[in-house]
Length: 77
Image (cartoon, rainbow, N blue to C red; front, side, top):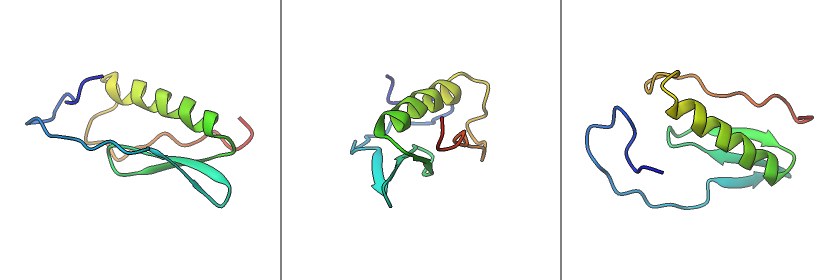
């Protein structure tokens, strides 16, 4: 995966830490845009949704300056 997104003006060093965290027994993931997405019952659900999130945000269909985020479908999915 590239360390530079379309629309980024300059390269930047990123320090990776786990994007996933647990709160009140539910799983969440952090995005590059600084949002927390979730909740998910299982870590695997959060991992799958992060993959979807990355695909959408890098597809060119969602503007890089968009304040939209991908809402979870619910805890039952």
